[in-house]
Length: 626
Image 1 (cartoon, one colour):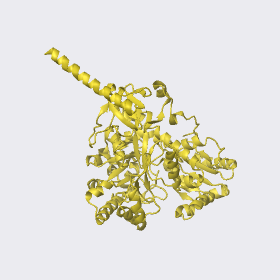
Image 2: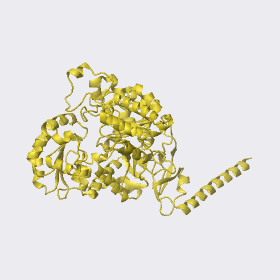
Image 3: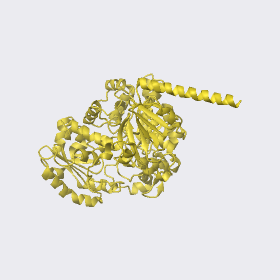
Image 4: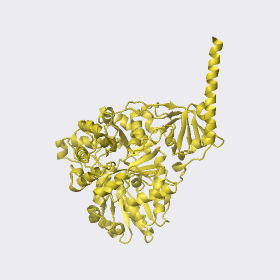
């Protein structure tokens, strides 16, 4: 009997060896993998449930021609190696699908944090811009530096060269509230016109809001003669997002492309490999397309059409293009203008009515979807068969109106419930939305929500009409702060939620993942909406496989499965087992997108016999306080 068992075991092993030897031979014929990672903890995230489960965890993974060729045991996968295969010993390290960030626009952040601009324009000797960045000082001290800093920059400016300056919110946005208030009172278009009558100037408050002078406004009007932004036209103030890509870099698209590429490389160094957002400027789209055509796009981008044309026929054309593009850029939805709004059904506290926080241009209640223009645009989008996604919204009233429109217009167009669900309509930001009663209806309509964990942390007033938990508690009461980023309620209802930062704070990605687990705001020592805390795995699902679903690319992104794109990160410690309070300190050693190494730290590069790659190799001297 013992001899028979030994014989059976031998035959079994022989069959396995023959099988894998045959697979190795097939691999040799079809093409060896370019990379194999082994001796690791490769978390595939192939569990499709809404439970706190990651699915399969394997030892090894092979990558060939941008995709995952195989996963399995070390012995199985290493048999596939060829003479040129790069074989990497993970030494027990954890590999995750790289991160997918919805409602994120690095095209903005390239002009709100200094790394990309400093990398491409390390000094003033260039044809485009002299850029200046305020140090990390209290706001009044920053304002005291403004005149001498601006005068010195203007003295250096050559004809046609812009002067661009940003104030500093601080690395933890500690100056944000005061800086936003003082900026609106201190920096005006009239003042800039006196300082710089012949040089285009743009000054940012430390975030998106800015003031431009007439020379800059003329440059933008030369590109956009039909500009309708009355606030920008009258006072030179507002978001003015097209200013840099469309006016400052007009005729200099290759340089703009390099600035955007540098910003994307910085985000990739923290593990982020795919984004969903509106482009906000045609110059941005042209620059991204240039990078893609040249094989230089470091990450993937699902873009939402922002208008301006939102008539019914245009929407029908756009609907026919939904999901089309390349492996790196594709159309994933439509939005228009600011859309949405901040109207809330939560009552306003008497204390707030008597003593509101002074945030200029904050509107207590407005709803874009019921307005004459945005309401018509929304109707055209739905009637035309387009997917609504990428929208800004921070009030539950707008979501009522959005769902009303989806139900009513879709049924008028003869769509079945399954066809409505297949659209995957979505909304972003989660500042007081959805309220609990809206979640079952979202589930019924097959909708998604992009949730912003940053709102659990940031101080009041960063964006006037988007309240975080601290400000929402002041306006409506602490009991309503569970309406902000309600990931647990959505998960328990079977509604996918995705992940956004919506700030130029790529380096805080693990910090914000942790925020969703604790909902603790160290600024005031409060835990806001404790019932909406989730564990680390639900946060990970949001930033991987559910993000892929938002991007309409779950067949190729979001998990580490055979046939999908090889988009992954290698971490210095195990996300799944490290003590919860250490999650904010996790480091990304390597980011791979489509089999290409986009980021590789110098320390680990040395260990595995490779050269460091990406942002980690930059030698630029950053401005003080950044």
